[in-house]
View (cartoon, rainbow, N blue to C red):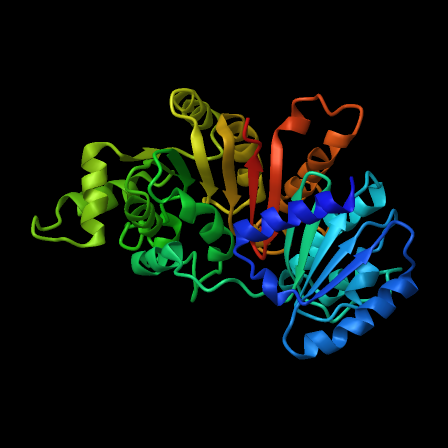
Length: 385
């Protein structure tokens, strides 16, 4: 793939993410035969620009593993556009970069292990890893975005959900991808009503996300899957007993429940019968958005993805939250082990790269369009056919 294709691809990605391209004052291109010394010298010249608050944009088209060596030379903030070029080592670089992204959940020993033979741990802080066919984008630091109103962030704060600060910072993925859908008719499934976070399961603090979706997507068909039946019944009763004069956002949830636009299905995401039932219903209304905010255990997240991904419509997005359990808490596994949500994401990267291979006609090669991860959460998007 030629350099101009990578440039065009990055422009599309930057536009979707709302990045301020004017802030990328220093551009570097590393063609296939560029040496490490060439890279260091070019990056050195960008240091002056970076000191003024400008950002560095690097197009790396080389045919060997170079991502980790660049981390030692990069000044932040910066964006690395990393062409895979069908090179297995470069693919493995990006799979490992997903672990680097989750540095806050790694022990010092685990983090050092990632950089053995790679010059040791760098100071650079990776904040985002996104891959589309044939190329990946690695963000170091936080690149400037165009200033604009963020409807998702505002709605999430109003609903009191922990998807945004002071809880998590999931708006970094949700906002650019969901804001354009605000007034669109589509089907959304979220796993988890939030009952497990309500202490005794009384339902008193459940339903924050349901309130968010009911108000943020006034035209969407919403389904919530929750396994704590008592919590669901308590929460639904609370919505039905609100004063008729109540004009709050919570009342809109009650109206959505009464109209059938919002429904809560009782069942476990680990139950094959429940998942099969959801899949059957999705044949009539394929999901445009699926969000796994359920049990946060790898043994739950993986079966849910495999069962529901086929019923995500073309161009649809599958979000997974609270992926720190790949590394610690609950059923975490040793670094690099299969059977975790982050390993699932790693296993999808090859499908983004096989369009330029002899087996490009396979179903899998035409299924995954984007894998984008930030700390604790990822999204996988299907191709639009």
